[in-house]
Length: 416
Ligand SMILES: [Zn+2]
Image (cartoon, rainbow, N blue to C red; front, top):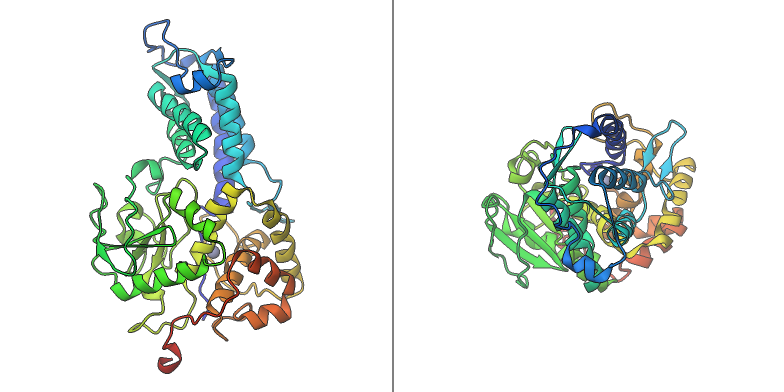
């Protein structure tokens, strides 16, 4: 049986958001005179100190002009389709180093300009706060100075501009778990406020795994083993996963709505983590481990492959991958090598077309390559199959993922 997990904010859903943002820009331009005038005492600069030291040449811009320009610059990054796949029907499978592009935009922003003094500014239905601007600018300048992950700046930017923050899983709404080295031992979760649901915790390969009381220990150990193997060819991926606070929220229920961060989401298998999400999710009942000899696909491996795209490849500006993967996908689909007879849970108004197939091709193929379990799906189920039928893809997979022997779910053969 073939299972498919989809990232909650799919490429098509993101496109919907772009259209939404476009209309916000239009509405804002029409009503920018509505901006609130609750400015702090005049003479106080909004340029944060760390940025002023780095970029003394930055110019003060009237706040309305500043915010509208920033919104348009963000829209241009969202709409960058350099590496995206656009289907003949107009569907878009987004692909590209958006994290890198956003940070370049942020750095250009804080190094050249800052808004004139304001307390709050009304943009459409949203009230933008000066303190959120200052957090955003401080994150950008600190990340630029220290050479650390751009995630904090992106989260602070979205919080300042009220973008995506109405989604319950936005990282600005949840405190992070600390990263504690546990080895192969589950410990009591050091859960921050609001996340007390999670009582079990384990780490490995730079990733935090958490689960509630219903999640079996054996499923968490198996999930950890699979991520350790998945990242074994490229240990530097683990540092990037860790600095971006990648976490897997495991659940053992019908869908993700049992989790505090995703109470309104009803995804049965799980979904991946984007750069500004609190975590990715995976259904423990769909994993293969002693006592649960599941013969289907593996949502931890599948969604972690998507998560590595969103977090690791985007931060590394991995153009080698972006330049190749969609051409391989289109060729595999046209040649009938990649089966498109799978069903996918799509958002309202979305139709399943070429752009969805292309977006899933990589994650489904790597999932099969790692599991290497004959017959668990129609195509790309084993390394041998991929080598015979999609050899160029095999090369791309082995650039990033291990080619050493590994036995997925030891003991499965005796119980299937
Ligand atoms: Zn997927």
